[in-house]
Length: 114
Picture 1 (tube, rainbow, N blue to C red):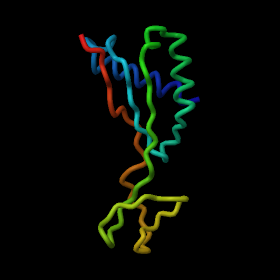
Picture 2 (picture 1 turned 45 degrees about the vertical axis):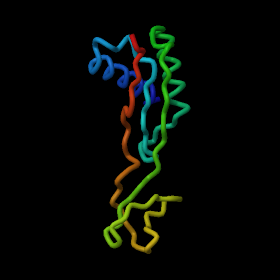
Picture 3 (picture 1 turned 90 degrees about the horizontal axis):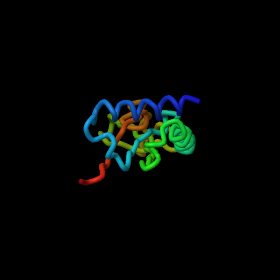
């Protein structure tokens, strides 16, 4: 289950990025593109398992947002959403130029105010 290592890496990165504020984190938002093969429920389950190992994380809310696959059409110079694995713009031009959908990133971190 690669989700467990992903969740662990997220919190390791947060600890490195915010050494002074890490213990005040109350919410973490992750954006995952549909092509990243990330399942939100599996991320949540991995987070719950990590809480068992590190109970100090229990007060943190983890939110996973799934992002649709977006591609860019060079013919009409527009971005379009890929639906049902059809990488074809509404103008009829096929495109493999993916501009969104492969990412996995921390998009927001909220801290407890003093």
